[in-house]
Image 1 (spheres, rainbow, N blue to C red):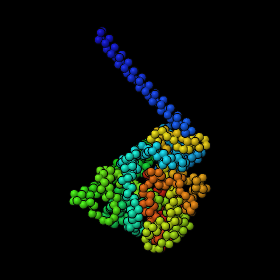
Image 2 (cartoon, rainbow, N blue to C red):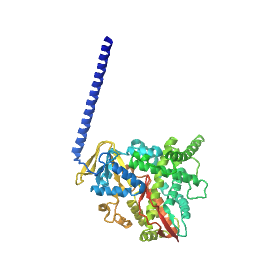
Image 3 (cartoon, rainbow, N blue to C red):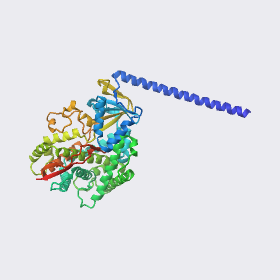
Image 4 (cartoon, helix red, strand yellow):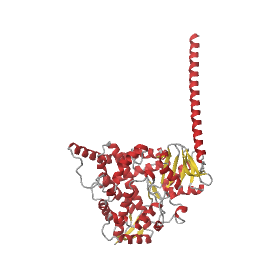
Length: 520
């Protein structure tokens, strides 16, 4: 009996202690919540924030209606127009919506984009959704990190995109010749988009690894393995893009038929590891021999420079994959969209070709390419209508605001709480008729005669994270256009399908760029 009473008292004391600690925890949590609410109310009041318009969901709890529509249009094409139409349904340039139960802010307002990317840069970072989608493939690199780690990556990579490397026309010419040789001379149909992706894979790996995949040259015994790498790289980046946009549930969608994500990821990593290990070993051996430089050819090789940094092999591999993504997909996508339009706009083709022929038949220099004003207009227009990274996002790393979009008139600031994602559609913003005129949906290069780029035109992003390789991409694209127009006098479209995008990590032409080219 005494023992039972003793146990009961001990049990009662334990319950009291648990309740006491539970009460303290609840009081602490309530005080923390109260302080947070008070601070947020103060920010809202100080800045005069008002909530943005809200998207009229069919599922007002989780927003699954838009999730499934995003998946549908990602697979079938038309996602970018679908997103653009949502702004029209809401009737504004900024609104909030649900995505898997999480409330996001969507905007195509230049002032908001400027704040997120530049003036309030430290208030925002890359969302975990994007990092989680891309990190398994690309590791910790310039496109998957925030803060000091990102700053270190950018400082590491920036010297490789100096004027001397960007203007290396001789390297471009080697690969352009192979591309030109693959275009039929009898005017038969060719999908230029396929060739452009092979071209940029060859040139990017040449610049990065010091050895090209050489997939344009089918007689090269190494080209088959390069093709396998290109296919695996394309498949894993496509999956990363879908997961990054639609959310983690997209991981359960069917993968590319006949392939596996893990298998492709392993192959991509092993392929790049071979180059990294060889470069690091070569540099270490040169140090043992007392040499300051590795004895290679005179060509600049990105990997050789990274090997000298002393970074671990995994870090070098990650940065190579990050830059390969930018160097391959973006330029190929730009060229594909451009020639899609040139095949349907004979006036623009003739005007551009006349400018190109003013250079003569010789391969152009970097300075000559930069002097082609109409070429710049044509590229600007292609990037305006078809930004290669058409939708992007940032997450608030602290409670903050964006300048406009609140209230029925959208003129008030909007409060953005810590952890909330702001999605900005460059595609939608660059097609706004109030910013680019009533003919904004049309391909008209001449608009750039008087149009001055600002925060409403961001094909290469903006602020501290602006693309460090944009001049490299524009130079390669311009050089490719010049050489094709020097070689062929006319272009014909061979496809009447509706133009929609194929979204991987970037945007490309879903039906392909099927044309016929008539040689000089």
